[in-house]
Length: 133
Image (cartoon, rainbow, N blue to C red; front, side, top):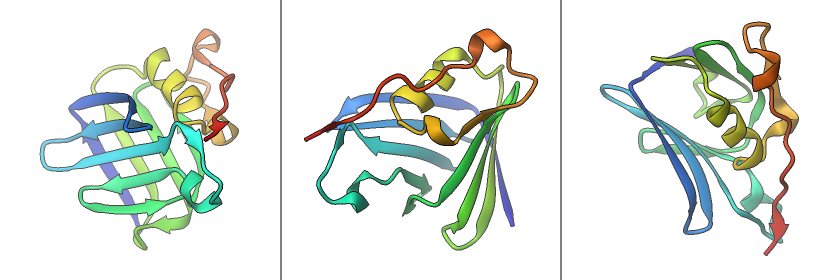
């Protein structure tokens, strides 16, 4: 099963309580992707967190692909035991800021991919890594 979300608002959270997050707000729900700003000794604590409304899951995402107006997250382990794909549709084009946030604030550059719709100048590579706490 797939989950499609029409994001009305996108919020960026920079280093609040040692966490970076991006929130996609719809008319009746919210989807967030978050991670710690530092590496922990416990590997489980370093997993990216995915939250849909009040339910959360750590890890399991195998690919994040950017299109001109949408972001598609593919899960190797179904998100919340239900969703193989989460498609986030944005009201405007996917900005360089969003792409940079995923790569250098959520630290998921190793699973980011770009469709042909994304201009070359907007394709950002991960250049920042988390430091051990």
